Image (cartoon, rainbow over all chains, first blue to last red; front, top):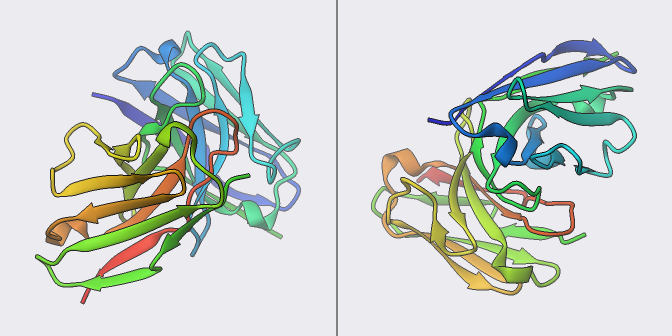
Length: 121
Length: 109
């Protein structure tokens, strides 16, 4: 059974940094791309970032490009999102998702429960 | 960037009624790489449909997807009490960003 568990969320001041982690199990981790998606309060889902199965290809939404960095450790079945220069608009529940193929072009087929990030001045 | 517009914003239905949700893309979605998700408060989103019309593993057959190009539809043939939720469409495939629609809330009438 696929299981994704996010951690690392919390309250951070504007301009601060936070690192989210996602522990994956139940599938061959290195064979699938992974993604981060967020949902701000009162808004819909927003794709944030994705990384290929080998980690060599990464993608970002324009809203986070240059501030967020996605990475993965295939030996530990972990994916990370390093978030710097945080803004109030980054306040959201952040979901880790497994994609359906090794390339980041796949669809998110399994999701975690999410971790809340609150950015406050 | 392909923009996905969902309608209606809210759909008020009674259990047993049919639900028809629309997702319109600003440009043609290549290879019908269009997915639908169900999201309930406090839960992980769940993949319902991929490739515009293929049901994901374990999804009941009352959920069906159709459409191509720029117009896509999610249909729930008879809404069950557990189906009240927010539904999102998403474009995937080559060329990010992999945008979501703004969502349709299916609520109890």
